[in-house]
Structure formats: C-alpha cells, structure tokens
Amino acid sequence: MTRETKLTRRETLLKLIAGGGALSLAGCGLDARSPAALAVLEKAETLTRLAQRALLAPREALAREYRPQDISSYFRPNGSTAPDDADYQDAAAIGFADWRLEVGGLVDNPLKLSLADLRAFAPRTQITRHDCVEGWSCIAQWKGARLASVLAAARPKPAARFIALFCADTLEQSLDGNGRYYETIDLVDAAHPQTILAYEMNGAPLPVEHGAPLRLRVERQLGYKMAKYVMRIEAIDGFAALGRGRGGFWEDRGYEWYAGI
Ligand SMILES: Nc1nc2c(c(=O)[nH]1)N[C@H]1C(S)=C(S)[C@@H](COP(=O)(O)O)O[C@H]1N2
Ligand SMILES: [Mo]
Image (cartoon, rainbow, N blue to C red; front, side, top):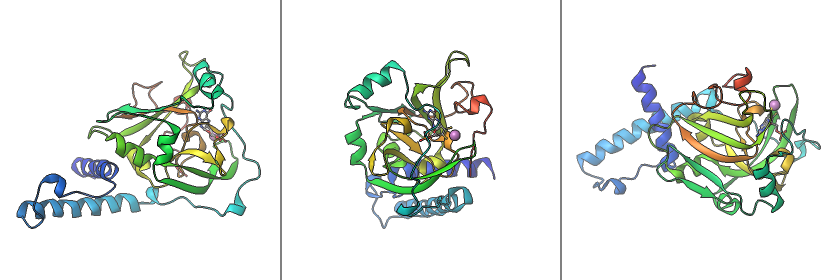
C-alpha cells in the first residue's frame, strides 16, 4: 500500500467519524449540478469505496453477538476492581454526580460530558464475549455510546491517528513510579460500530469492579484493551510520549499493542 493510499484511508476514517459517513454539499456552498459539485460527489464515491473496503476487511468485521440466555451468571472482575485513588473515591462517594468525561487532545471541540450527556447519544446494546489474555472468557450485555459518535461531537483534527483513554486507577507503582492504567486504539477500532463507551452492564449501571462509571468495549480485541474507569479521552498523533511508549499499561509491560481476536 502506498503512503498516499494510507493517508486517504485515514482521512476517510476521520471523515466517517466527523460526518457519520455523509458528505454535505450544502455545507460546501455548492449547487448539486455544478461541475464542482460533481467533483465533490466523485470524491465522495471514492471515499465511500475506500471506507467500505476499510470496514469490510477482516479486522473490521463485527464480533459475534450472543443471546440473553448466553450471559454468564458470574462475570469475573480483573485487574483493578476498587480503585483507591483519591479522585476516584471522591467521585464514587457521590454516585459520580460530578464526574465528567473529558474529550480533548487533537480535537476542534473539546468536551466535558456527564453521564446524562453520554446517555443522550444514540445508545448501542450488545451481548459479547470478553476474552482475557489469562485464558478465561465471560459473556455480558453492554450498553453505551458509540465512541465514533462521541468523537464526532469533539471533531478530531486531521492529524489525529489514535485515541488514548486515561483511567482513574493506579494498578501498580513500580514502573517509573507511574502505574496509572491507560490504553490506545487506532481510528479503525475507534470507528468500529461495536466500539462503545459502556455505562451499563447486564441492564444495570456499570458496577465499580467492572469500571464504573464508564469503560471501553472494543470487541475485536483482548480484555486488557477495554479500559475501565475512563476519565479522559484524547485524540493523539502517536503514543511514544505516553508511559513507556508502547501504547498501554500492559503493552508497556510486554503485551501486544494490537491484541486482536
Ligand atoms: N482501568 C483499568 N482497565 C482495565 C484493567 C485494569 O486493571 N484497569 N484490567 C484489564 C483487563 S486485563 C481485563 S481482562 C479487563 C477486566 O474487565 P472486568 O473487570 O470487567 O472483568 O479490564 C481491563 N481493563
Ligand atoms: Mo485481562
């Protein structure tokens, strides 16, 4: 693949995120019959084709969804299950009433979203299987806002290439004195229809042990990519400057950055 093609693909994804897939001619101030408008439409057609190719590649296929009767009676919590970080405890003590998700970095419209704001986005509900790298799996129903919709509202800049998620919990102090959990995903996964910021699990508000008030579900990847206790999201152009530069808490400790399943 040439560099140009790669860039076009990235721009396509950004466009999809920014416009929900639709290109507005009116927004360009163009008459739909003019040669300029036709050129835009032709471009849109190319974008659609590239977007479809991007979305139909195996990595972008949907993860399997299950039936309600498949939901695990016990879903094992893992990693942090009760963050003792002071900010988190203060927020949890009042039921996350003052909690806000910050959306920033390389965006034109930084946001601070309450849980009510997040619930105002069109919700997606999915029953999926969670696979931990340690070798166990559990099935649950998750409900949340599509990450793509939240990002669209924040309007990522063209330079954005990854989405970083910063969490409230400190899992360990030993590595460079900073064991705050964080994760990064690329724009393909960010735009994936099953990639959601979940605030509900099995029909109830997300329990603390599973990441209250908000966690990522990125269903084509292993459990450690699914950041719990998400406090801030940033659009970034690279993750070399975060942690040890490998793109996540467990990645910094040797795990794969792309944990596809
Ligand atoms: N913030 C944060 N997110 C996290 C972790 C963590 O310790 N802290 N553990 C990860 C791992 S390894 C797994 S398997 C899942 C566990 O999710 P669960 O507790 O809902 O089972 O969360 C992932 N996300
Ligand atoms: Mo895991």
